[in-house]
Length: 534
Image (cartoon, rainbow, N blue to C red; front, side, top):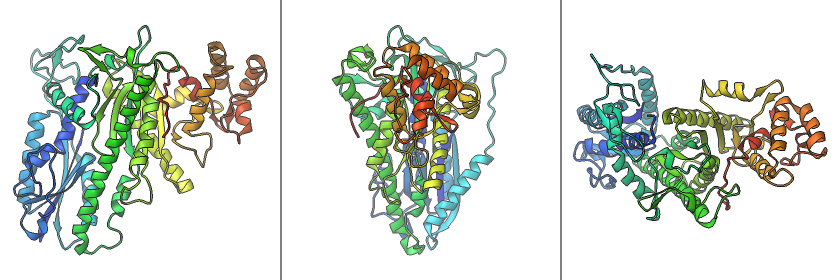
């Protein structure tokens, strides 16, 4: 039986309230809009539902369906169509929905013929290769930038067609059709967020960076966190085993659906765990170790306390979260642990899945789109390190990378790292690091950084800013300068013993071409741990 196999993906603002709508529109394109564009009959019990359910009795191979959704999740939508004309009509209707409801959103679509007598897993693998090629071939669009006298949108640079309405203290501003579509989706996005992550009525999710938890009299920073599951493609490819018989296609479809639902459920539960842990921390602590963080100092508007945390992208194996900059590392590490905890039974692997995370910590009014791009770049850097470790040790480890931008962000991550952390002795930073103990490079792990932060907040370092500042300068100059620092400022006592097996680290501050303490010294004034145990 000749069918058509099709896959949909998306790719493609400077204000948080625009990002809220943008993330919602991306989710809609590969979920509700795609479901509604399916020809009838299909395998959904309610095609118009925002949360459609599969009808397990309906199958495309017996000729009773015009279309069957194989799975939807992680930003992908994969379906089988009875014929090419049905697939073509689906593409047309989905494209129209994207053009009308989300100007500026780009869809990437690939399709290929498929016969039920073939092995479906191989066909989906080939389709993903086609999708990647389609993305590379896609010609960027160059919209008409206006004729005569026009006002430019402050977010996109495109011609403004109206003024965005003011919100709170934010005044209105000229906005393009793309920006207005994002803003118009904000209320729907708020409803989806509240449904996905239930919280007490006294709390609300912020829609402005100023509501994320700024402390009076202090410079405010926000953290944009992007996390992505590791090896999900390999796990998916292992589903179905080595039996390539077409008679296994139906079982394979069910296993893939189970996998897709399992990944989504695990990521959502992990985010809920982080949110619950944050609220518990805020409720139980009058203030954090630096005396700045509690329920009492959250911003209150219309009787609701705005949490210093907001999920932007969720529903697959990746997520994007924005939060108070002081919480960035705590939120990221808590999520990575929770994701592993909730993927213990995930198909296609021999144990829990891991994830990688990138945390971009920037000033609160820095362009959100640039901060997001940096968080993605940091996440990819963490993934590269994970692959290096997997090759060296055979272990699948969660990894983390972050960047604290005191000023602007100029250039690529590697260039910024070399400019800000490169010295004649090597790299000041350990990043990226593993979430747990590192079997290959013992010092390059989060427990080492965390232990050093705790040590610098305790005696004899506590409240001695000049001493910490002098250490930071000595670390920049290398091991010899660190030894001189110990004689002058520390009574020749060694530095905190964060890796007992590495004696030279506490004497000279460096191991090989890596400094073991600079990350902690940099984070000691702003990192807020959530406490508790995993």
